[in-house]
Structures are given as C-alpha cells and as structure tokens.
Image (cartoon, rainbow, N blue to C red):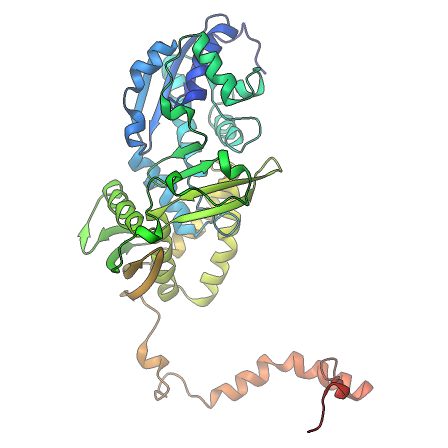
Length: 422
C-alpha cells in the first residue's frame, strides 16, 4: 500500500457508477488533496456514458478522458480469444475478463501522459478484477503506485457508499441504487448480487436488458449467414462490415431471439465461488458459427490439440495474465490454426437456439465423394481390416496373455447367476 503523502496525482479507472464516483473524493480526502484524473474506456456501454464528464468534475476530478476503444477491444482482445475457442469453466465467454487488460493499458498510457505517479481502480478485494488491473500495470509500468480503495477504506456496503456520496455531494443516479452489480461492454452484460447471491433463485425476467425472454421471442425462426476470414467474422448476409457495426447488428439480432444467456457458478481466482448471470448474444452466436467452420477446415489432430490449448488460454485470460509470454505463445499457435478457417456459416435462430443450417468453405476438408459409401478411389473399405488389427493390437495382446494365464480376460467374467432361463 503506498504511503498517503507519496501520491500527488492519480489516474482513476472511472465508470461513473457509485463506487468509482465515491472514490474521487475519497482519494482527495485520504491522499492529502492529490489531483484525480478520471479515465473511462468506451467499450460499448452506450447510455451509461451520458453526462459522465459533468459527473466526474462534480465529484472532484480535475478532468475526464473518454477513449472510444470498441474496435481495439474487438480486434485485439475479443477476436483472438474467440479464435482460441477460450471458454472459462465450460460456459463463461470471458466478457469482463478481457476488457480489463485493455482498460489498464490505457490507464497506464494516460498516467504517463499526465505525469501521474499513481493509479486507482474500483475493484473489490474479493474479486478477479483487482488482479487483472494490477497484473497489467505490473507488466506495463510497475513504477506506478496502485491504489485499491476497497482494500483500504471503511466502506463495506452499497449503503455505506451512498452515505459517503451524500456527505461529499457526489451526484448519484437512481440506477446506482439497483440491487444488481453490472458490467457492460459491446461483448456482454453481466449481473451479480441481489437475488443472485442465492443460486437457488431463478433470475428475474426484468433483470435482463439485452436479450428477450424465450416466451416473448419471435415465434418464427430467422436465418443469418456469417462470413469469416481466417477465423474472424467479417460479414453478415454477404455484407462486409467493420467489427463494431457487425457486433452491434448481431447483438440486436441474437438478443431478439433470446440467445446468449448463461447462469454460472464459477470459481474466482481468489478461491471463492461466485454466482453470475451473463448476456452475450453476438458472442454466443459467433462462437457456435466459428466452431462449425473449424470442424470443416481443421484436421483432426490440430482441432483436438487446439481444444487443450483453449482451456489454458481461457485460464490465462480469466486470471488477468493477458500480457504474458505464455499467452502470446499460445496465440501464435492459435493464429496458425486459423489460416484455413475462412467461409460462411448459415444459422437458424429460434427461441434461444442456434441451429447450424449450412456451412461452406473453399478450404473445407470434407468431401462428399470421399465420404460416400460407394466411392473406392480414395478409400478402400478392405483396408479397414488391417487398420483395425493394428489399432487393436495392444488390447488383443493383453487379452491373450490373460487367457493363457488364467483362462479368461479381465473383461470376460460374466456372472451367469443373474440370467434366468425362460
């Protein structure tokens, strides 16, 4: 923990929510009136950015930086993770996880630009985000001091934070009194807290904001074609689109059909389990399409090994280890696998379901004439006999040795008393 008199200027990762708004006066009060510069990354929060500068200044900040990082977010973080097939603990598509290293990267850049000697964030001492922010800072500029108010102050609840805001005239909106803690970007919207603290509770229908309830989703299925180039989505229904516009359209389309909800109990890095609900409409749709295209374009051994890499890649991203040599090394492998993953996937969307309705690629390894039962030019069915003999040789040898030694193999000891004669 830095000495309070050592920090003269701090750049704060600022969202405009209750916690980071309260942090502004808290820093000035507890670090001898140090200057607080706020930074907000525009990752697609939309209306959450409205009036942010006025709010930051009223809270006591000297200025606010807002940077539109949506394309960088998709290009350098979302797409590589999607190409890797990285999913944490079977269901989590890492929407919050890979946003943090990007935010921290620009936090460091602004601190250097401003001549600041400290950085601050609003992540709690129980969660993963504190690790993600701080590991990034350690990798990019470890000379900057890091202040994590949740590990220092006496505020322990949302009620405490609201009281502190009232005491120091910090503007608070009605949305900040919501029972849920949310994180939103172009890729996903997460929900924690409130009723979700008990995983037996079914999430309320009105909690969801970007996906339609299945009961209210259209009763008619809708088709969409997504084009990929080297594992990156580039078009919708034949129209080439830049990354941000592509994601905006697919979020609306998939969200309309109730696609992308995930209710997860996950293992946090710090050791405890947490319960969260995620809305990831476009990300869920693209994951399914990407998998379908890879299944056509990757050979068996590359695809199977890539599945192993995906688990490790997801773990690194979740644990905040984006800026590491291992993640870069895994990414080099992933990028090599994506060279032939080019083509189009047709999807049928219906009430939360994503159904593969067709796929095609000039690099497809599937050939109808090879797979046909009648074609013998490439594959002669008689060759299978020798293959099976060699493939099963270890099993055969072990069984022969057991029969010669004891009269039966280990798998051949039926209990005939269980069978009754008619």
